[in-house]
Image (cartoon, rainbow, N blue to C red; front, side, top):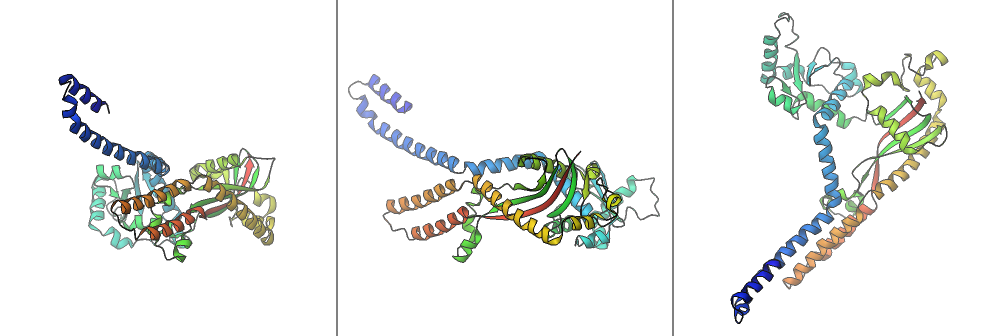
Length: 398
């Protein structure tokens, strides 16, 4: 507008009588261009407003993973590897050594891990090259041993692997990487547990972890492709919610304090926290910090079963699960943005109507899309909550 105003003033100053007449076409052209620019800016502003919740979630996730990418990923992979059969794994400066002799077949059987074919894996050209490099670098190693021919040095750190071509990169496509990931994805290990832990409070109960998903059944029953959900799925809360349900405690302890204590323990390294945690399903007679065996002459699992007989236990689980599900659904709905999803659907339908009116055509797809979006919106308004894990926790004041 300032440019148009300056052009008008300049035209009058140059030619008071006919200057404005000569400038009219230029003003019209500038006005049309201005209108188009304003329209484009409106689209950008509208999109920024509509997709703000989703963009904020994506930015938060990207920042989190960029900040913790290497350590978080490597720690998770290594811990799962140790649980599923890769015992005595050597780790130093982000370099990990897997050895077939230290592999525990019994742990792999218990965790349903399918290990790689060690002979074919170690015979791969790249792995033979890496093993040969280590043999040359380790002059003190007895050449008669097969230690280096039956082990592989690698890393989950991408930067480390790029800078050192003699270090194997455990990435998708690698047999060890794939067997660990496949086991983690298919195993339910870690989704149910019962343990006692030292804490700053006395509290006993369940901690349930829930996630929110669109109700896909509604679309399937109407024969609507699930691909229509892809645009609107992230208007639902993407983070998980943890809900504690107490059985007993000393006084009224806020839920957030219970969750804080629980997460502080879960996030600690196992080696540093093993003296502060006692597995209630342990069948051996090893002593934990609760000293159950010395007091009751029974293994933890036997003590646990006598304390919570089956009928009582089933009743606890059913009631606490329902209570936590209702709380989780309410909390996750409050964090969702279904109103913004409805506004986006209305905008798409309005643009279809405007386009058909502009070209003086009947919109054949409008009614179809309106019906589809109504079902999609219903699937967001009536979402399903999925139980990710259930944990019985006995918090004992230090």
